[in-house]
Structures are given as C-alpha cells and as structure tokens.
Length: 421
Image (tube, rainbow, N blue to C red; front, side, top):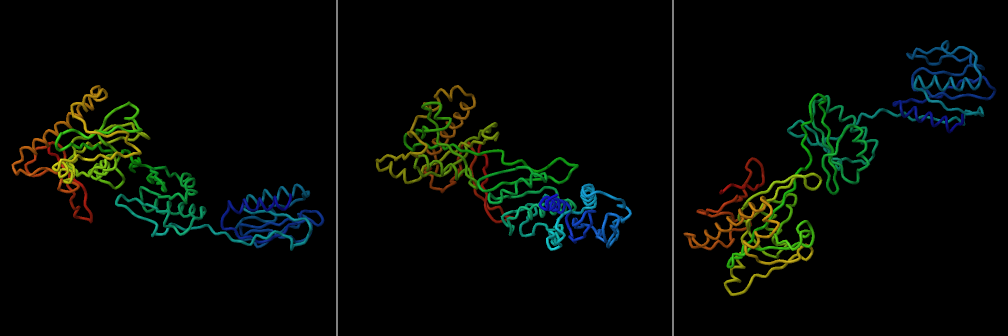
C-alpha cells in the first residue's frame, strides 16, 4: 500500500476516533528492508524487537488486554499487511507504511485532537418564559462551521439535561452554511425573511411540539375616503394585480400592513401613497377574514374609514377643488364616485360577501354624514384630531374606534380598537 493511501486511512480513523495520541511503533513485516508504522490511539502498542512476526512483543502494555500471544504465528508480507490494517482498525489505530527503512521518512502524526466540549456563550442566548432558548448566531464571534456544529451538539445535550423545551436558532444569510448541520440535528424551518432564517427544535420526546407555527396571516387595509361636499367615495383602478385582471374595476385604495405598523397607520399611509391625500383614521368599519392565500397564508382585511385633513376643507371653502395625485407605479386611474354606482359593479353584486361589505361601508358613511349634519356642538368633523382621531362624545357611528394607550407594566403604547356597533 502506498504511503498516501496509508495516510488517508490514518486520517479517517483519527477523524472517527477523537482524542488521539499518535506515537510511532514499528513492526517487522518479515521482509528485508520493509517496516510498518503503527500509531496507536490506545495505551497498548507494539514495537519491533528483531526480525520476523514471531518476535513482536507487547510494548507499554496497560489495560487494552492485547498481548504478543494474540498475534503469534508466521505470515507473509501481504497477509501481514492486511492483518495489521485489520488489527489496528479494531483497536482504533491508524496505519502508515514506508518502504525504505529510513525512519526520518516516516509520516509523523504528532497532533492530539481533543473532543470539544464547547457550548454557546451566554451573550448569544436568550431564555424565554416558556422554558425555551434562542440562539442568535450573529452574536457568535466565529463563522467556523465545525466549531458551530460542536457547540450546537453540546449545547443541545446540556439543554436536554436541564429540561429545556423549545429551541430557536436565528441564522443570518452570511452563516447559511450552518443550516444543513442544524437540519441533521433535527431542527426545522420555522420562518424566513430577507437576511434571516429561523429554525426550531422541540426537545421533549414524549410530548407533541407546542412551538407556534411560523407567520400564518397577512394583514391588509382598505381606505374609505368621502368627499366633504359631494359625499362621493374615492376610488382607484390598479395597473396590476387581481383587480386589474378583472378589467375596469373601481375599488377603494388598499394595501398591506408593514411589519411593526398599526392598522390605522397603514390606512393613512396607503391613502397618501396611492392618492396623494392627507387623512386621519376614524374607525374600522368591518373586517374580512379569508384563507388559502399566498404560501397558504390566511388574510385579514380591515376596511377603515378615514377623514380628510382640515386643509382640504379650507380649499373647498375657497371654491377650489381637491387635487388627486395617483401613484404612477400602481394606480391607472383615480376619481370620486357615487357610492350606489360603486356598489353596483358586476363583481360586487355577484358576491354575497362583498355586497354585505359594501352595505357596511354605506351605513358607516351615512352615519358619519348624519352625525356631521346634526352635531349638537355644531363643530364640523374635519379630521383635526390627529392620526387616530376616532369618535367624539355622542357619535353614533358604527365600527371600531382606535386608541393608542400606554401598556403600563412595560414601556410603549399599543393600539386598542373598541366596538361602537
């Protein structure tokens, strides 16, 4: 066997058997000028003490249970070579051979590889109230795949012993080489977005996983905007998308809620982007919940009633009209339309769902107009209350009004939508 092949075997065996201490021992193979090098992974080794296989003696024998008597007998050069490989494989040894009798040419293996016991550092971990652990890979000080594998395997074992339940790993794009190794250890894909993959593993083997699914629902809004004088509804035609595919369909401005954005904020933003109008949120008129959307996700669609900013009332009072600025990338046309005409489009009249939705919009607008015309305070409802003006005392409008309120037990505020049905 050539030296390179012998070294390859040695490297494979040393890879399989960690914590190897390599020491050179020589065994005569019964031929002139030929010797085999045995590097032992155990305290029991062999050394040459003269010529011939019969002369092999146990050298530095400790607790392996091997002795020279185990190998007594004559052998040929080839059979000895095979015997040596078989024996050394069984006891965790690696074999290399050289043929010129010069010990200086012996391949050296003087590196001791210790089995790693490294676990993830605490600064990369976050513990939750569900007895789970999150690993933030971006906080690790290394990108070495092998080191990550060792740390993950060791950490999982520690967490099992400590009774942890759910494991989460946040892997940035630059560390995507870690992903296959997480899969090998039983982690599943949970959530992905630009620049980040989240993987999870449920540790208790006798329990069904209680980890939540990944994001299951997208949230969208529709903006209902009414002209203060004509009481017409603002409508748009889209350049692309499902509505555009249905021909000249007029619809309310719509869009998806961005991450970290409230429904009220999204409605105001979408109205500004698609029409150029500044508005304030008044209330949620109704909500539609559907399933089987993109990637199998569910969809929640909130129809929001908005009020035009006070400056438009001033323009109308001066005899000027409200300027509409359509979003060139998405909007093909924009206009004001009578609500009866809007609701009589074929797509809407053929759908019990949208017939009911449009009826709810008409009732909300009618109540808003009636409240404005019959307001006891005589003050026009012009949307001057800010982003989420909401209802005023005495309002009889239908829908959910929004309030941004302090959480109290921790910093920050959250939107609360309460019913005025």
